[in-house]
Length: 131
Image (cartoon, rainbow, N blue to C red; front, side, top):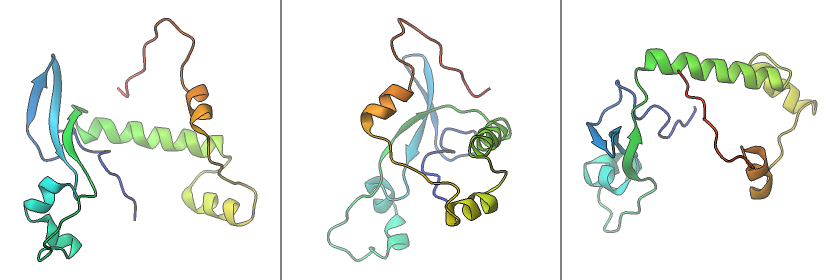
């Protein structure tokens, strides 16, 4: 199982209506465990339909239009291929094998290291889009 969160929200195929804000095309997003979703009947999924107190585990909001899945998914696949290449593996099975055998390990990065790993010390830059 893989949790995708809002990864596919904003695509044409995802539910939600489009609207514009400050010239940007957005789509409404309702997380599966957001209060809005729970109140609309999603509480059954979490066995909470009779609960007097509901606790949201997600949010509702808006996301930028991502276009069609047919354009977006190939971008994600290519990103995974680059990540596998960076780790010296070709697929998830080999990744797991290398992890279990100690050939590969994941490390947590501090907030400072995360900032350092992102673009910095530039007056301006253009962030590449996926298409």
